[in-house]
Length: 96
Image (cartoon, rainbow, N blue to C red; front, side, top):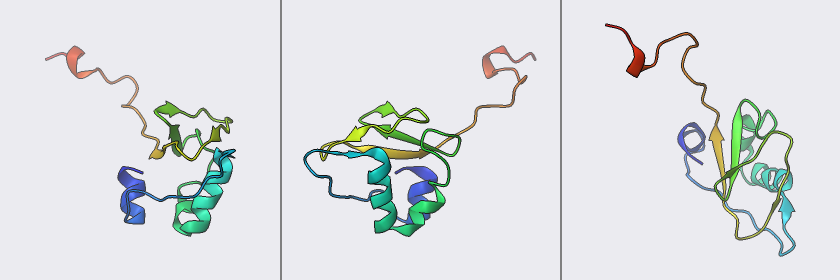
């Protein structure tokens, strides 16, 4: 967990046990919620949606996906960040 989520929870990581056959990402997130209910404020929307991005082993999980996670996988939860204002020139194209 990074940034806002880590700051809000006061910790950079949470661990859960995953059986050898793996678990769906949604189940792993439910286990995280059981371990620390404050995680729920960040999981209010679907993973991959507008509020939170899940990254499993450096691969961003798209909205609606629920990949199988093994005990060796690393999951990062990131707050989604919006881009700049539309119509604003980029710094390299700004006129003086």
